[in-house]
Image 1 (cartoon, rainbow over the protein chains, first blue to last red):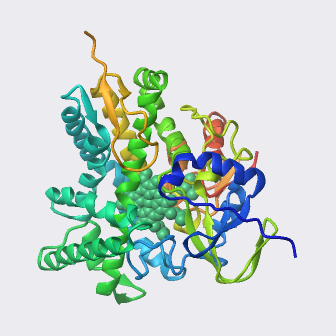
Image 2 (image 1 turned 180 degrees about the horizontal axis):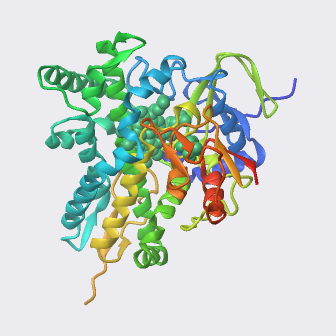
Image 3 (image 1 turned 120 degrees about the vertical axis):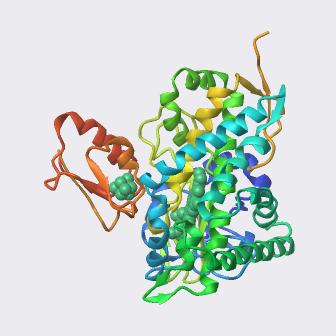
Length: 387
Length: 66
Ligand code: HEM
Ligand code: SF4
């Protein structure tokens, strides 16, 4: 038997600082390999292997979870941890709220919120636009989409940080926060059951039929919980990383100011190169060989989206950020049957956030060069005002 | 040019609608079809459709005749 290629590959926390070099090394020398982290997993680093695995959901199951490590709960999250046939029933419930038409209807609120936030952060000379702009925008929109009281968004970031970003270092804290979120969700569900029906996410969940039977309370919670974790920091990360780049690349910033028509292709390029979700996991349902590696039934398999997105076999100059790149099929939203349910909304929020920011704020530059490209932490910029 | 959307591959993410909203249409769930039942693409929209094909994340837009 040939030897199994092993790397100490990680895709969370500080590993992200240098992950693009890591990916390159993997694609060049170890496109499929094994890492001992998080209980051990195979990783796929090539665009084509990731695409094929995403399409082959029968071999690459999402049970017990797409998340590695888990998000503070052992309950399967809906719909990400559910395989067909139930998966599509869950998805169909909410799909109509995420079509282009539905997103168009939400756009005025996104624009208004972005303007209000931008006008606030620009008051000073220096601002943390991670905290003041990138993070609140998706949380505020999410309140309307799901049906939370608008003022509640202030509580969300703390929960998300503890559940997602503490989970590899402090799993107990992550689990406690998960319970707090579930209690919060539950109080909303109980309240809404007393109120007249409304067509938002909660309204659809509490009246849903799955396979001809009413949805259970557990299912409502497991869906609501997942949405909370899927829609907030991902979008905030995408907005922050786009602004992170523009704060360090005045020429591209100037180009987008001059030609706002390029913002949508720029947003796509930022999503490709600085994806908020760098990888997701699957589990092999049978023995299968990928790139010469013997993946065994039950093995965990990590699809390294961030690496596939910079694969030299898929894109010319893959590590270059080219804001008018025309052909840009990428995995920022995954692919296949689990591809992001909220992609139209997430994308729209990023585009509007950039457009309104550039429209209302003078040129800005990075103040703290140590702030990383990844995550949802601070992004400190100085506004350059004409004297 | 003649195209079709493979319904078994389309995941309804509407990249096609960004590039050629006059060629594709989507149902209430966001799944795409080609507006023209014959799938024929007018000459002046061929380039836009090529961009849509290149950006469809699922490779769901089939080029039947180039
Ligand atoms: C720019 C922002 C966003 C990014 C980068 C993103 C990324 C992703 C990724 C990578 C996946 C996994 C796909 C796979 O494994 O193939 C996913 C799934 C999902 N996302 Fe997003 N997402 C974003 C915004 C949102 C928003 C705003 C919502 C909803 C409010 C949302 C809801 C979901 C749901 C429900 C799933 C699970 C879909 C399924 O399992 O069928 N996402 N997202
Ligand atoms: S871009 Fe592709 S997957 Fe998305 S709706 Fe159009 S045909 Fe379907």
